[in-house]
Amino acid sequence: MFTQGLEIDSGTLYESTGKRGESVLRAKSLTTGRESARVRLPDRFFGEGITLTDDRVWQLTWKSGTAILRDSDDLGEIRRVDYRGEGWGLCSFADRLVMSDGTDELTFRDPESFAERGSVSVRLGGEPVTELNELECVDGSVWANVWRTDRIVRIDPNTGRVTAVVDASGLLNAEQAERAGVLNGIAATDEPGRFLLTGKNWPKMFRVRFVPAE
Image (cartoon, rainbow, N blue to C red; front, side, top):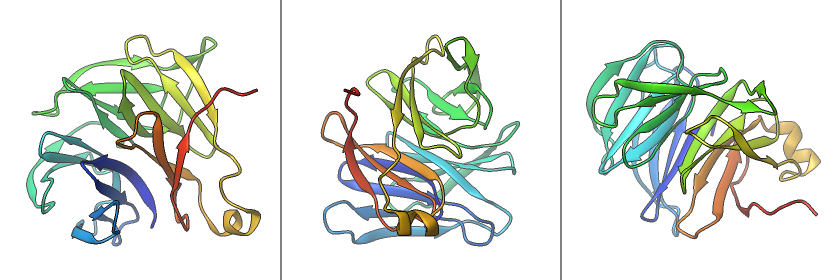
């Protein structure tokens, strides 16, 4: 799957995939792998990041400027909302959504209306961190894949400061890596400190724990 967004909620894995004419959103059991729902996007949309808020799923599209609100059970569409710029990654805290657009900026949005509620620029050592992609909000921090790299950064959403950098290289062997695309897909599991990682057209997902370098 050309993974663009990954999210876990109450034992269900939600995955959004990209490519026009092939973009889908699906839900499946983490324990059995059984798919419980799947929807295909209209051909003009390129699916991107997703996040859950209450019993709803927000789904971004890449260059169409359209966010789709869906029911989390059957993934049926509830409504669409327009936004400016590109849509890349999306995650949620209790009171706000966090969205990336491929730049160094994270935009905060209202979880009900999707209206903008401010933004922050992401910095590492005073320098901007661009191409922030798939996001995961957990324990007050935003974790972000950095596109076309094996890096994941942890961001303080209040200041934009990068507080940790993860080297996620080496998950695939040489043969797998040659066939696969870039790292893209991070989801916090129900087990504290554990995440699922995957990438575009990766043959598998990995359950990982981030630890300090020795």
